[in-house]
Image 1 (cartoon, helix red, strand yellow):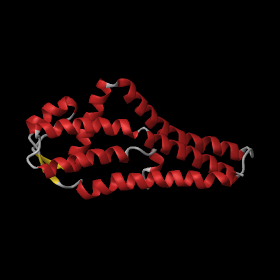
Image 2: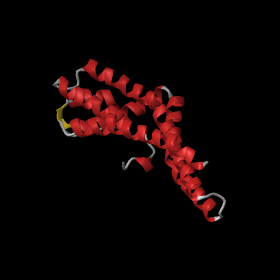
Image 3: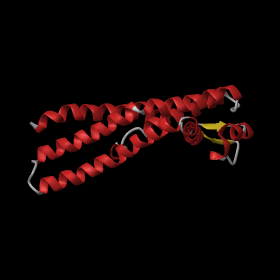
Length: 186
């Protein structure tokens, strides 16, 4: 009976890991090390005091992380309820799989569930955390897109190539952070 849970849970986890690799890691590995020149004054005006840029040159990955961080701060000020909901989903994904391991381990030791049941429950908790993380990613992506639109309008970068690389890396950072930490090493 427990083994019936294996296939759907593994499929959800595999889809989540594939989405993270395809939309996150692939972009960061491809564009993350690209050197970008940015107008420091415009960058500081756009992002505010949440980030600081010491020089006019940095990698697209670093600028993307700063852009995402600033987008989250601005989103939290603009729509605190939605931002708290996304943070709650992240905390759920961070806490549930390890807590499930502890509960399942105690239940197995007490001889309440078999090994296949313990594995199935852990996979189900991890799949639920992954699914919730991916389902709530849209609001964070919209927050980054809003700031990216403003970034494009202000012409913060010298080249449009740099601008696109930074925005792509910011979106990729959102995808990299979507999964529970227990699956991030994959």
